[in-house]
Amino acid sequence: MCYYRDMNDNIPNSKICTGCSEDKLLEDFGNHKKGKYGKRQKCKACTKGLNDTYYEKNAEKVRARERWYRESNPEREKERQRKKYLRTKAQNNE
Ligand SMILES: [Zn+2]
Image (cartoon, rainbow, N blue to C red):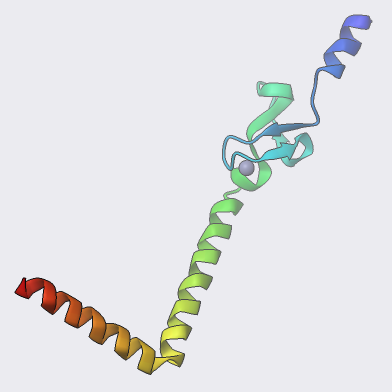
């Protein structure tokens, strides 16, 4: 009986996900008979690919903001392009 209790005591309430490398609660992992502590290696979010979607969404947000910035600052963007052009020209002349 003691043996079983010790086994239970050794089970942590969290483990590191192999997908996102985050220390997550065991309840965040799906059940898997052969997995460590009877849980999958990846958390539920990673298993469902939710984390990828999250990053994709963020990347899209960042791109949208950059686009918005360029569109709302056309003069600055023009100046940036001009400087880039001059820099390239100077480099070619060297
Ligand atoms: Zn994960």
